[in-house]
Image 1 (cartoon, helix red, strand yellow):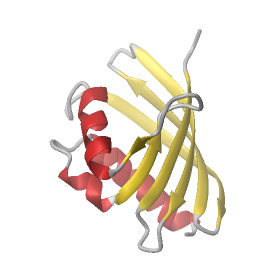
Image 2 (cartoon, rainbow, N blue to C red; image 1 turned 45 degrees about the vertical axis):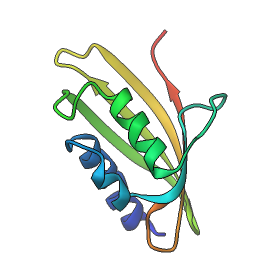
Image 3 (cartoon, rainbow, N blue to C red; image 1 turned 135 degrees about the vertical axis):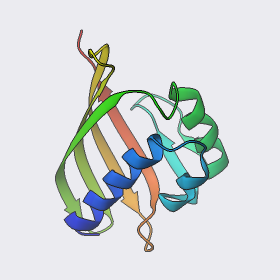
Image 4 (cartoon, rainbow, N blue to C red; image 1 turned 90 degrees about the vertical axis):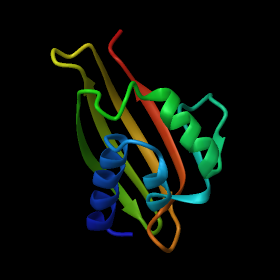
Length: 120
């Protein structure tokens, strides 16, 4: 992976969040991917489980949010990004995250880990 590929993956992730349904997840995650929503949470494993979590976590694909990201590092198949997401207009909730992503050879993520932080 290089920075351009990671940038493209981050854009695809955001677009997937904005897309109805979960079929698009197969374009960004491998079938056996793990998705860790926080450092002390149990990982969600496998594309079907990730799809169920995805639908449960978002209000709808139409929810209003603004996402920005900055790649911190790319080393081989591993990337780290700093991500900020603000929900609502006006903003009702915001997160600053660190994302650790490990990618398969085809560019899909097979291990996703987020460290979310929100204002006190």
